[in-house]
Image 1 (cartoon, rainbow, N blue to C red):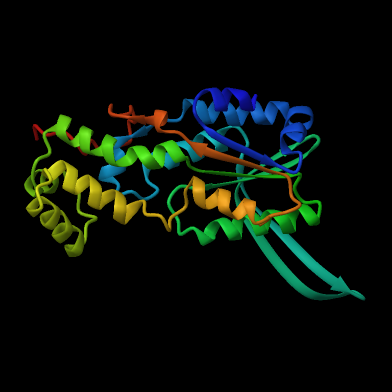
Image 2 (image 1 turned 90 degrees about the horizontal axis):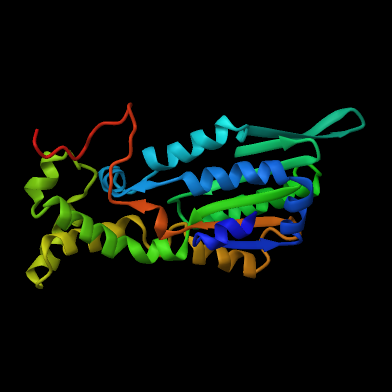
Length: 259
């Protein structure tokens, strides 16, 4: 089942027999996850309009998972000695799937600071040691997506005719600082087109090297963070990016240039 993700360009890494555990103990749950991920798309319009943060694109993935039983759950751990509670700790996980043979825990790290990977992996480690979960899963931006952001955003802006700050203001793209606007102006003064200057500034400020993406996750796992918990790590590929607006009845059409 994981080969389906690999064939579609997803980064997939497993640790501590995770692939075997999923194949034999969680085939239905894994099928649910693979179906949600392969159907997922990220609109460049939403990406830019949302300022790079977790907006409609990742909310759709979260809703798709929740609809199949991967719901938020808080694990409450109490330490009792001679009838007296010594410690009480709560571990909240965004997506937990309870199955007949065990429990899967999943975190989506779209665009946080990279130390969130340490938090997630160490949380999985503790929960696994307590036999609360069978396996931990992290989904983040993949290597190909990270590399594709600048050229795809610049090309999309050119296609949309976004050639000035005024065009962006008309689209209510307001999540930009004075420094970011100044950076665009500086890059244009050096010869970049507006689309290139905006895309470069946007990607650098919103999806920089210190944010959560595939190489940062690989680094943690290579150092043994999370061991010995079985782990499945998934990187979203650039093939999920689409130039077309996604059908979402409840969404605001940010890029209706005729208004």
